[in-house]
Length: 285
Length: 71
Image (cartoon, rainbow over all chains, first blue to last red; front, side):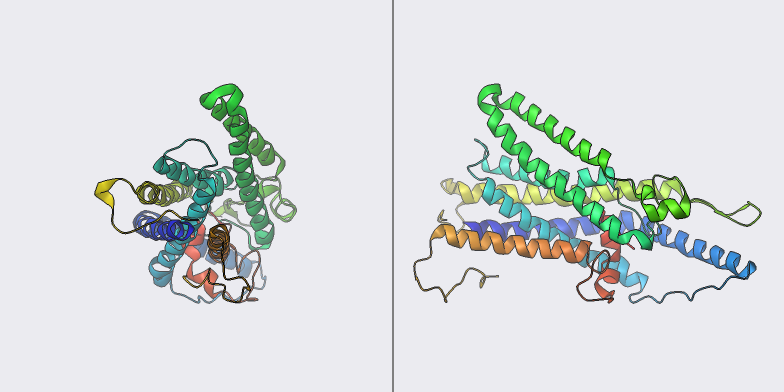
């Protein structure tokens, strides 16, 4: 049973990753390219400023993979492997949840598990530390940013598990509806407290020293010695579109995992339905 | 994939279904988390292959879009 669920989860994840990749290739790639173009233009302007001021300029970095590879094969492999990974985690979570989270239809549970993955592994961390296109994010702070993001993911996953457990405990006294609402509220309060306690990326010590009191790492306009703007700040429209497409890509990914996995799990767990007997799938382990 | 639950070295030939399921589930979680790590984090905040940047550069766009901190 575990094996069959896992294999179906991997398949659902691969399909989901493929769809998310197609979406990303069409919608997100132009915004990613716009971010990279902004960065190149800004670097050129900075180099010109440094030269004018007689400061040493570093050599430009060399690319390991061309933009074409990154924007097609690279993002494709990345999205599909990520989909497979998330499909695997959904299948395992589903197997663990079976029979332990109340009286749900197999396919309803599958959708709920996928929704839980979307919310806890992506959406909640995104609210605190949203996805950023290339050129936003200082290399000096990558270790801190990585740690904070993972901490946010971890808290959100743990809180969601606790909320499901809490909902079960409250169910006897408050009934399904109210217990679910109370558990949901507890989840939001707990994640809200963690979000309030964790620092904004702009407030990290390295950033505060260099750039002053700012909440984010989004580049401001580049200013020359006499105070004139020589290169604009990061374009707001590119940032918005990139983040919108980031959410959309994850929504497609998790939605597809849920919708592909749900009917397969239903078939696996209710093999008695006559019309859909494809192979012998004895319910074991 | 199919080799994960096979445990011929075990002295007892009877493998409980629960054990078998646990092997599948634990193995799957490890693979899932390893993929998550290599797509999202490796050669950024931490790196298991030192200063090599091939994985990071190859899946660069996906890492940004999936919401991981980058650069």
